[in-house]
Length: 76
Image (tube, rainbow, N blue to C red; front, top):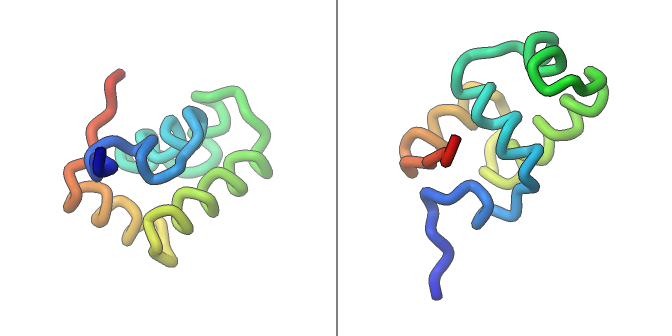
């Protein structure tokens, strides 16, 4: 079976990284993502970096645009 580009887990993201991407797509900055997910800011930064790598982009803005373009869907 081919990976489904709309499923963020098929990019190799962990459940937590998917949560971070979902909040990034809502426009939340790291500080608010930290509060929302009850994570340390350093942890969120690591997750954001992993999301950027998985989407093969270099900025948060590109990550959001790419995720929208491929039609990533969240089951929440």
